Length: 470
Image (cartoon, rainbow, N blue to C red):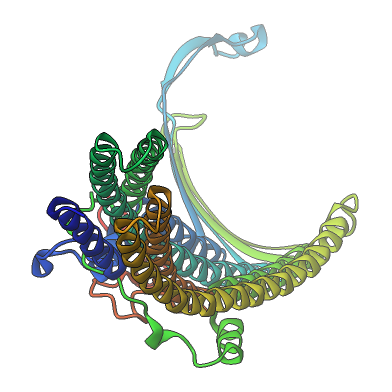
């Protein structure tokens, strides 16, 4: 093999080593790390931010429910002009009366206050239901956070792996171009046949097609990276698995997941909210007790110069006897919905358990696959060197050399994929047990607190501005 072919082959080996290491370039200090990419996704991912906005809207259901404890106050004010013109009857006229005109300016101002004293504990249960919905929403938000971080880790590793795969395929094209040139030279001196040249040409065309496929895959990965993380990938540092956050055993992982996964906790809060709805509907059968007070000042209503003040305090008890039966149907319906929510919680537990087992198996398989792929690459490197030497002395054909090169390329691509899966699988296990959060895996980013907004709005009696000033 010529010096040019040797350099191309060494380039393939170096490119393969870089791909195996999943390193992008030599400027490691300026490279973006996987942790910084996760921080970007946590701070700017639109799906996650939309969920946060939805949670802030859910927080407002608590002050809405608490409004049932508070009085309802209303004021009224009226003013106008009344013109009177007429003539008295004949008897009144004979007695000295007559007709006339009069203009009145009726005015009134009033204030009323109504306070519910008892409504079948519906306000209590509405408040409890709203609080359960807020807590469930926080768990749903945490679940979306974990999904976003996992998607970011996937996107990051996909760009690394696809970049390394593209470099391998480009180096392979260079090697095959040199191989074709050598084969043509040997054909010109009669050492090989036209068939050998055609085989080298076909393999080169296939390699160029693989480069096009790899470029397409990389463009797709870059687009996904931009969508999830929010910026274009530039200089990416190698990604590493987070094995330190993975439980020691599958049993421990399942136990943690069943106790901490936000999907399960959200489902349990949904059960609490459904049970509160039963109590709310049952409250329709209870009497309602309220007291109301009003005060009004009236002037010039019928006769000019008249005025009077009216004040009242009224207590009222409303006892429902029969309202068509709708309230009973609502109670029965809400009880069935409680049963549905409990079944959904059990289903969620089963889904989480299955996801943990699946992710754990994927992690173990990726570990074994990395070891096997590394051995495969080493063996194929030895085999390719041997086939090349044997081809020099006529013991191997051009097709044997091409096949050996293809096997080595496939082994290196498989190793890239295995190492990518090794990192992603570790993140997936941590996600399925409910711990893939920026706080738990120590991502350097300012933490978003859903409780902070809740504390700002839960006791507000009035105001239309949100805590951020809108």
